[in-house]
Amino acid sequence: MKPLSFPFPLNIGTDIVHIPRITRLLTHPGDYLTRFTRRILCDQEQQDFHRRFGDSLKARSFCHKHPPPVPSDVTRWLAGRFAAKEAARKAAPAGAASLGWKDVMIRVQEDGGHFGEGVSRRPEIIYLGNNEDGNEGRVAKLSISHDGEYVVATVLATG
Picture 1 (cartoon, one colour):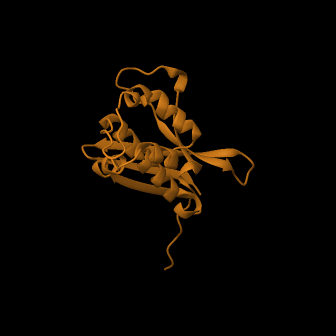
Picture 2 (tube, helix red, strand yellow):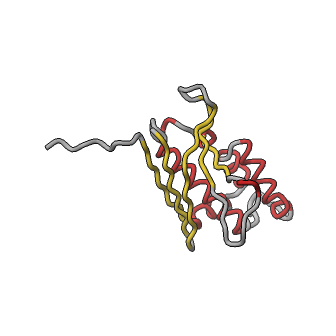
Picture 3 (cartoon, one colour):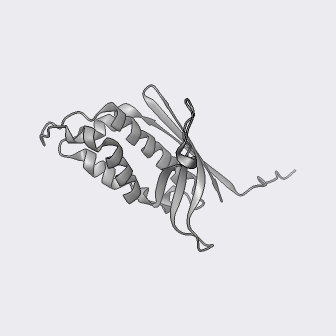
């Protein structure tokens, strides 16, 4: 008997990142933090990053041979973005090779801006660029979790 195909045009992508790996990357000689963020974050995410962490990063004294440690909250945030973008690329209809890091944006829903205590804001994926239907960007669902030294992200996108 021939198996039936899945009845919905959905794609799923998952990625896991070991946070110490990102820490090692960000402490390479030279200003690798800036190089890393410019490589993986689109313009809007760059603005969000600097708005969120600008003050804590300005306080770092810098030496090219021995860069200062990157604050752990910055490293965790970047590890989460990296995992989410990789999961989103895997969930893209044409696969990960069809998209670059900046073709995918992680956006946090602002549901009116009011959140109760213990309520988390829901991040989502935006595939940037024009789609076949002429719309700019396509939204996908994102689940992201941090636990100890790991962050895992899963994306569900329409095919």
